[in-house]
Length: 91
Image: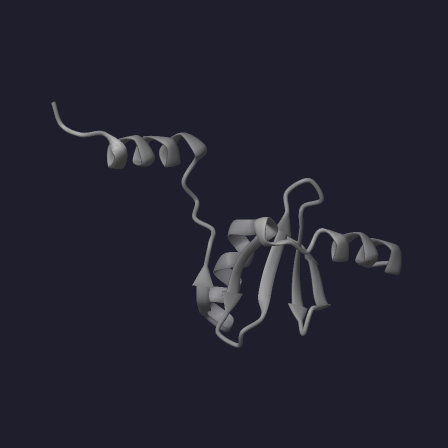
């Protein structure tokens, strides 16, 4: 990818875009608007890939493994239902 795109990704390298940290300690980020995954090493972008997030998560899982994973494939509705069921008390 071009340097301009890498600079744009650097500004998007924030916690809310982080999808996990691989077994080697490298944070992985995803931007759904751009459809791009990137990996940082010592705060610098080391790898950029145009990939679907689920495919990338599976790829890293089989190649390196995850130390921490913040992504799952549940829908927003499923997350909301889980939250409601955890916070609701029985009648």
